[in-house]
Image 1 (cartoon, rainbow, N blue to C red):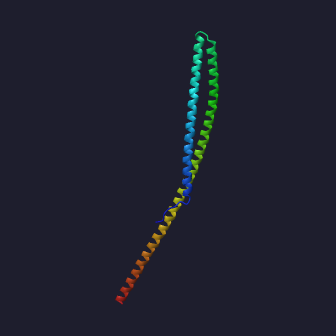
Image 2: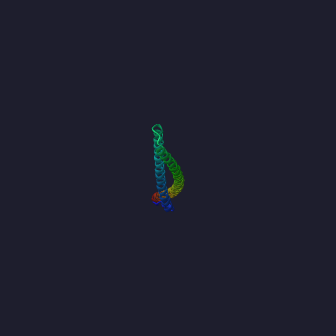
Image 3: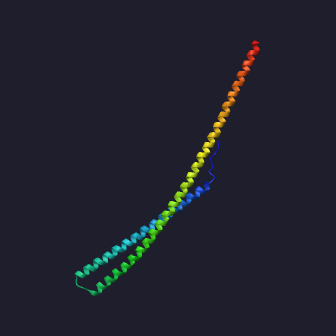
Length: 162
């Protein structure tokens, strides 16, 4: 029996590897985004803590130095939050790029898998057609041999009777 060999198998293998690399890049980008989100959440919690401390200071005896320090700390944290938000936006953009690359790699791999599948179906049709021809030839040969034997037997009977 004939063996199916896909002539573009090495290309398909490369597409699988590229897809795996895209998956890894996407996972890395997602991890970075999650890390940046956690940093931002920590900064927001820290800012809320400073704001709460500032409210408590205003309720107690007014200490202008502590209040000024608290206001500066809040301003610094707001600046850090702004920078962290920009980092988070960069991380989200990287995730989007990685997602698009992954989708492209998956589509290319699926295209090549479909081509392989189509080639295999064509191969099977050719094999089936070849086998069918061989069976037809065998049946024709066998039938011809039977007719030939039957004809020889009839000739032998006529010769015996005659």
